[in-house]
Length: 210
Image (cartoon, rainbow, N blue to C red; front, side, top):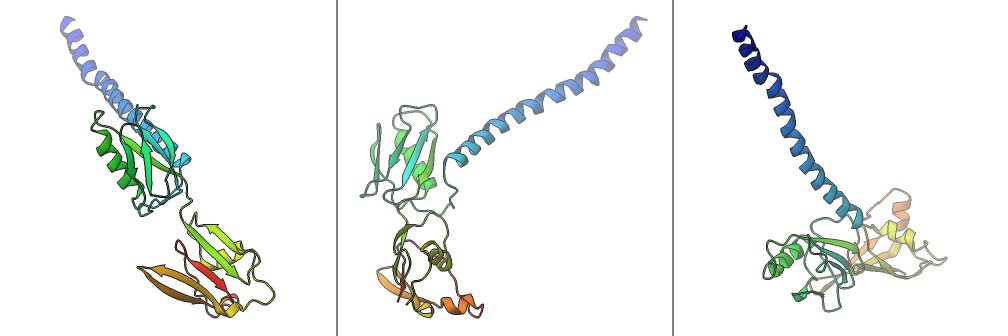
C-alpha cells in the first residue's frame, strides 16, 4: 500500500504538476508582451504615423518622453534655428534628424546624468513641411504637407481652377540641391484619362497655375 501511494505521488508530480508549472511560465511572458504592446500603442495614438525617413524641421512639435523621468519629459517646438531645449542637456539640434536619430542623440546626452536613459520621440504636429498654390486657383496660398499628397490632390484642396486657368499648363516648381526644376502637369489630359502623370509633392514645392 505504501509503495502504491509513493508511485502515485511520483506519477502525479511528473504529469499534473508539470502541466501546472508549464502553464505558469507562458503567463509571465505574455504579461511582458502586453506591456510592450500597450506602450507602442500609446505612442502610435499620441503621435503621427511617419516613415523612418521623415526629417524633423523647424516649427515641428515634438513630445519627448524620458522613461521614468517626468521632470525631463515635455512637449517642445523646434525653433527656427533647428534646435530644441531640454533640462540638463540644454540645446540639441533636432532639424535634419529622423525621430529615431534624435532619440539616440538624446539618450547619449542624457546618459551623462542618468543611468541607461530610454527616450521616445513623438512627432505630434508637422509644421515644417509646406507647399504653395499660386495663380489661377480658387484658394491660392500656403498649405501644410502633413501626409503624402499628389498634384491632383493639392489642386482639389485648393478648390479647383478659376475660370481663366490654363489647365493643360500646370507647373510644379521644385528646388533641389541648390537648383530649380520645373515639372509639367496636364490636368486636362489627366481628367480625360489620356495622360495621368500625377506625382507626389515634396516640401516647398510651388504649384503654378497660369
